[in-house]
Amino acid sequence: LGARTFLARPADRAAEADSAGSRSGARRAGWLGAFASTFLLTLTNPMTILSFVAVFAALGLGTTHPEPLSAAGLVLGVFVGSALWWLTLSGAVSLVRSRFDERGLRWVNRVSGSIITAFGIAAIGSLFFRS
Image (tube, rainbow, N blue to C red):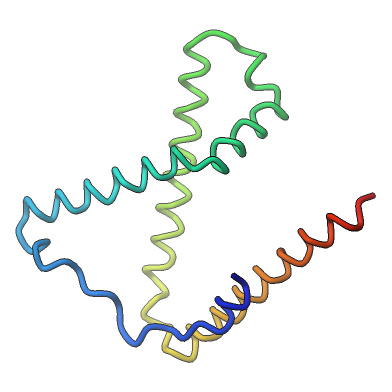
């Protein structure tokens, strides 16, 4: 994945939006559909579920407050935190994306590919060099 990202050629132009999105109702259905599919995909991702289970177990959050209101507050906090993170990330990208030309995007691919490769090598290395 790291090598593939490193060698990827940036797209010449942004992907075109669906032509049916020009009508107001279709546009809302498109956004709602995109949100729903992304939400369901995230909810059913095993790594997401296992990550939250591990974090909650490590922090002892599953045992300290067994009442339902605390659990609802925890879920709401995770949802709000995730939503704020994605809004911040997508907002920041939308502010700087016009400043990147093909050369800049190629460097983004190179840096990202290098980081992914380094994490992959570290993960494989951890199998052989456990302390």
